[in-house]
Length: 93
Image (cartoon, rainbow, N blue to C red):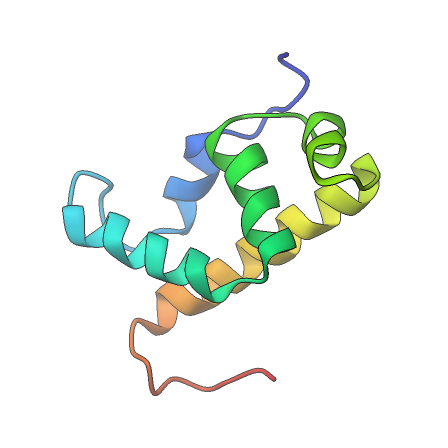
């Protein structure tokens, strides 16, 4: 399904360094691990696997709109986590 225009580029855009640096992928995985399941799954399905919001929503058992919101929320949190780059950065909750 080519319903989603989201792909790995969406993830790359939020990374401060290049994807061919293995430590970046480790940071990404670590950041993904800090997200709630819904957020990380939406990011994984839509961002990494390129599924549409409807497809991701079906996998998660939520609406396409909810999946899209989860994705954007997840990406925003990843951006914060990755740009902080240090565990003692400000917490937003």
